[in-house]
Image 1 (cartoon, rainbow, N blue to C red):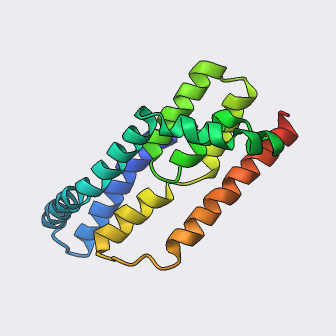
Image 2 (spheres, helix red, strand yellow):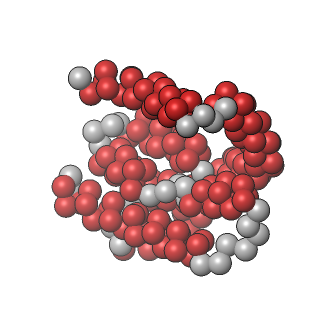
Length: 174
């Protein structure tokens, strides 16, 4: 039943919007085309920011800098009972959803989906957000250059999500 509802919800929503627009005598097709043009121009303007983030993450991982950083933090992580395998996910998650999903995929492939690391990675992936990506896309789309406190609050929320993931996974699976 849920699958059938989820399959039909988007077409029904679009049909409802079109019917409502027609009822209100709005030129719906022209507005749809106008919105599509605006969406394409926004996507093109955001492409350099997204490409820069993806390339930076790839260089950071491929150069071995991430492994060196994890090795440097390893004694502190052992003291705090934080698995060092999860650090790359904690570092990439605020930057890019695709990169962090790649890290989660690697962790689950190497450790197994039912392992503590696999479960922790899954919970952490769902408990944090792609703060830098969101700020880049949304602030870039409306032309905001100064982020103010949004970056600090977003990264603090990510840190709280990471800590909560660790606490919940140790309490439930630990």
